[in-house]
Length: 205
Image (cartoon, rainbow, N blue to C red; front, side, top):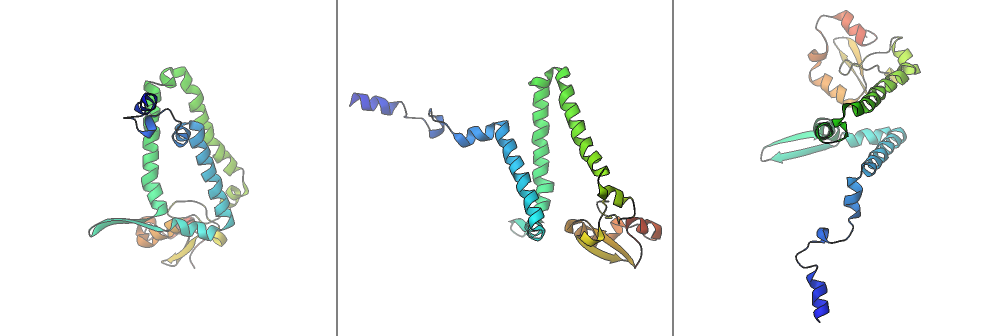
């Protein structure tokens, strides 16, 4: 009996997390490779989904999510929640982590900062070079219309929407740009500027 009570006493006052047992999920989330694997898997799933069924993919991101307290609240689609909320939190965490590395981590030695800096610059420049070398960039220089909201080149046959404003057709790359333009067209079109409108699209209808 004394041996059994002694075995029980060693666990008394300890929670499950404090015992000498592994916590696989916690250990997995703490590792950089684990979180990177989740991110890569999410990117691959999004790319496959968007290319297999673009309609359902766009419909998912247009789902409204509301938070209300009494008669007040916020109601945005999922894309806006991610872009305006989760991304702000993401960059806050990135900034805090970078600050920690400068103060306490490996980047205290400034010579170690050269490699991450070069990697970041190459990571920004490489997609630009790939785009400029692609046929899409060459076509955009030959007169593809430009989305007046985000200023991206748009293929009229694949545009997410089209609005005729004051006799001028505007094509858009996403439904979010369509909604922003429809709510405040004067913000994106200079009044009385026919030449400016033609620069955005192919011309008046």
